[in-house]
View 1 (cartoon, one colour):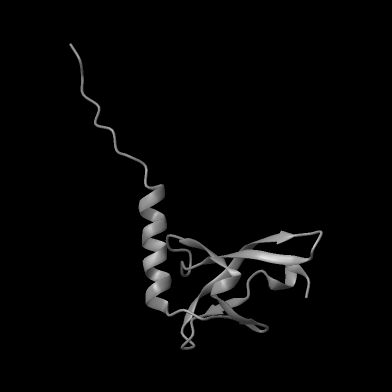
View 2 (cartoon, helix red, strand yellow; view 1 turned 90 degrees about the horizontal axis):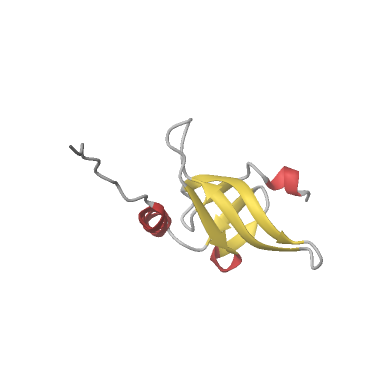
Length: 96
């Protein structure tokens, strides 16, 4: 399978619930190995939330990418990733 064919593949949790789609991947070209995939959990143009998944979390790949974790765990990881990347808010005050 070519990388271009893999992008856009639907991702399912271990119970068959749709999580999102593959939007990127990290490949080790010399070995021909996929290290990680990035899935988008956003829907229909709403705020897109991406999550990097390791191959340890993947049960199988074909017409779908099937994870060996549940949707709830994916959602937790997305929230954790957002907290880590959240930018601090700065309060600006007018000085005299």
